[in-house]
Length: 117
Image (cartoon, rainbow, N blue to C red):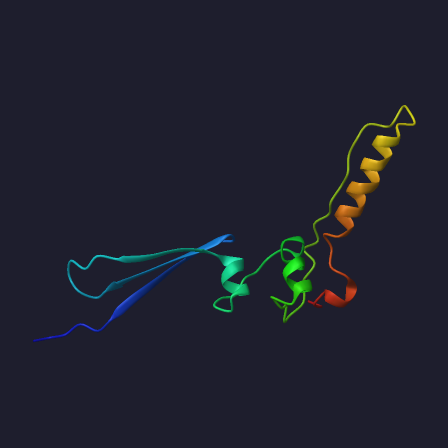
């Protein structure tokens, strides 16, 4: 009697999640689906790797639960804040603009974290 021992493993990988399934190499075999895991969680748990943008991974890097062995490569994209010219001395408006500028500055890695291309 011939015993099948070939196993096909499927990984459906996306930015946010990875799904894992397998099927045996025999007629009529049904795939076995193991489920979905968050891509960054798999990397943090040491069972995977993830590619992520700086603002989404910086907290894990600072905690030491992830590493960026090759640093970061700048995408060349820019963040632009558009708005109407202010007609008043609205303090809340100025506070908001200062806050959003600060948030956008945190979305870019420092020179030490950038990997030269």
